[in-house]
Length: 468
Image 1 (tube, helix red, strand yellow):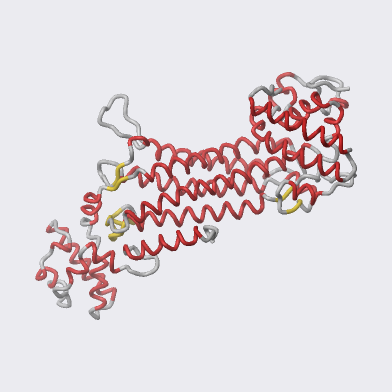
Image 2 (cartoon, helix red, strand yellow; image 1 turned 120 degrees about the vertical axis):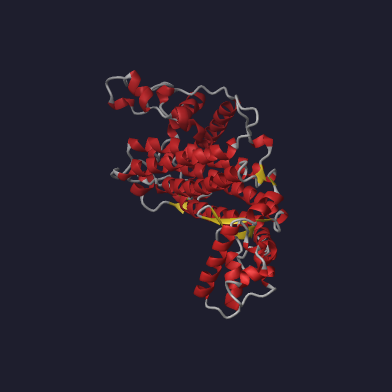
């Protein structure tokens, strides 16, 4: 006979667990957050056992009602989690048994904590991915609105962080949209592999009871049961794959953060972040620090670390389940929590971002951003591109010596480098002429930016999965 704090495996042991070992090996301090998934899995398992005649109808009803009461206590904050009971599974089972008696002890028939925790984790991660996809959608929506508002706003485009060519701010925001849609595609692909049910694999070899795994899978919304019991309990590929997708998404957010930090600095002055997403200095009263993007940039390294932790966790494990796998949850939980938070704060922040159009335009007017346009102009006049490239390079060198951009050089000065240059050259040397000339699919022209926004919104309205 066992009581509420007796180990479920105590029958084979003659000595109690060392107190420090008990605390060291317990996971309930963090895996209690799986309680909803654990209870849902147990209810589906009990109903399957009843359908198969392994439990009576009365026992099943008592288990389902008892688990509902346990869930109510947990959500009301009156449930006492016990470290002595090790984990979320045994805490819930012990509470159920204390409530309904022997029927509670029958719940674990035909399953193990090995397949139970693998099932709980997949149920939890499935929900997290759905929430993250909503978070990406909200950020994409904010970026589409911002891109539409700033479709005509000219700014310098950079390579090597040096002024390269004029682009539009809207076009730059649409580049971020593309990155986020790939993130959504990766998470959606991962979800398909998460949505496989381990329950019924038991400890590693399956069970001798006549269970119906298809019934349980359907009840829990899984696509299908896992095919191999050994793999089902020991697989954590889905956790690694999720963390890899999350790491890429955080890398993207970190790149966004870096640009926001640069653009909001006094040296750039391209944008203004709302005060709600910045902080001040305890000593320098003039400071407005972009703490939110800085923190997102910092958290990215943390998620990268979680990915390496999970890869390292699994690399030396033989089949099937090993206690090592207890270490999968904290990195996974922290990854999902931080990515979800980063997406939310980014979506809110982008809705309140304002552009300094004059500073952007002034910056685009510097650095000879229309040099490529002059080279293209010469090519259209019959000059081979490599020759045109050299001609413009010499014109740029002259402009540097004179301290004037190409558009500020006189026609006579420009014609010193090529007689093919005519009065119409200033049409291509203007910022508007440069961006409008790139009027093709994927180009920076305002017309193309608006067309890209329209396509994205149409696809979202039609329910087309992003990243496809």
